[in-house]
Length: 77
Image (cartoon, rainbow, N blue to C red; front, side):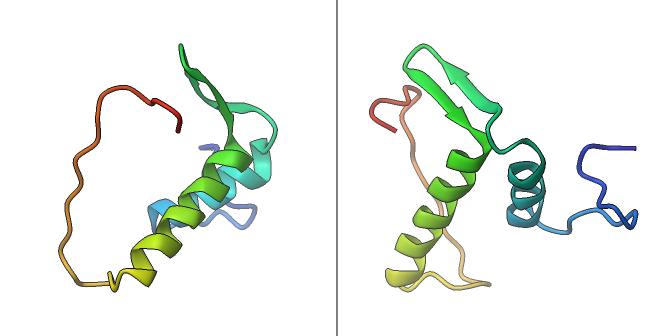
């Protein structure tokens, strides 16, 4: 069984759903470890939700194409 498989045997259908499952199960465990710092699954989920809110406020909606350019360093996350 995958760590992403729900109790009823269902798998999340989207990346946000998968992250929510991981944050529920492993909230205080490290999801990202980099020279600049560490982020737990719960913090990663919160940050992703915050970023999704920024995108929504800018008018990005389901079905609208988008792209991003991110530096290779995490900087101040």
